Each structure stands twice: as structure tokens, then as C-alpha cells.
Image 1 (tube, rainbow, N blue to C red):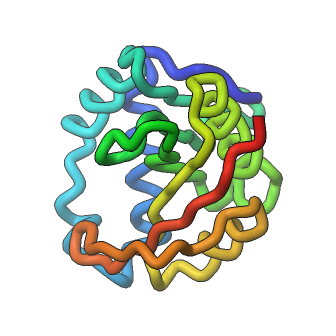
Image 2 (image 1 turned 180 degrees about the vertical axis):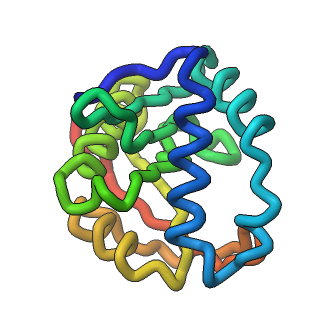
Length: 161
């Protein structure tokens, strides 16, 4: 089940993020994971849940939050381009189609906001995530950056309205 996050979901989302960071980035950047501030992150997610310019969606399985997606305007505020800023799932929820539902919902919300393209960034080393996004029609567009000490690559896809 997917639902819009509320202000009371900040701690749930922060716990999912921390677990996903441990699983995904723990070996690549242990300092990043060690410096994760659960309470501050929970407060940030609570504020994001009521931000009308973004969409924060939670995925629940058997009544337990197992993932989330955060989307909105792309960094740099390029007209017509939206961004999936974050998609994280607990490892127990991988392979169940939940990630696909979260991304599809985020793209639908971006389309409803008038976006015709969607971008997202993914850690270069994360072949699993890159394959997942490629399966959903995203393609690396050559954009590169560094985020928290990790090399990241940008993916892009058109939004069919």
C-alpha cells in the first residue's frame, strides 16, 4: 500500500533511510553512515511531508513502513524537469515491485505538475539500483557529481503524459 506521508512519519522515514544507507553505503562510505543523525533526519522528513512543492510517499507492507520516495522540482529548477530525489526500501522489501510502484507514483506526480522529463542521481558503484532504473526506462545522461564522498551519475527519462 502506498500513502502520502504525514508530519508524524518523519521518524519512520528516517529509520528506513538509515537502514537503507547501512545496507547500500555501509562498506563504500562507513563515515557517512556513522554520522547519520536519526533525530535531525526525522525532523527534516517531518518538514518535507508538509512541503507543498514536493511529494513524499510511504510504502507499507502488512501495516509496516518499508520504503519511501521523495520527488519534486529538479535541482537548479529547470522548467519542465522534475526529480526523484530519493527512493529507499528496506532490504526485506526488495524484489516485490514496491520500488517500481514508488517510482511510478513519483513520475505520475511530476507529470501532473507539468514536468515532461525526470532525472535522478544514483551512486556509480550501485549496479543493482542502476539496473533497476534502467529497467524503468531511465538512461545515464553523462551527468556526474560527488555526493557525500560518493561518485554519483545522473539518469534521465522522458515523462509520457
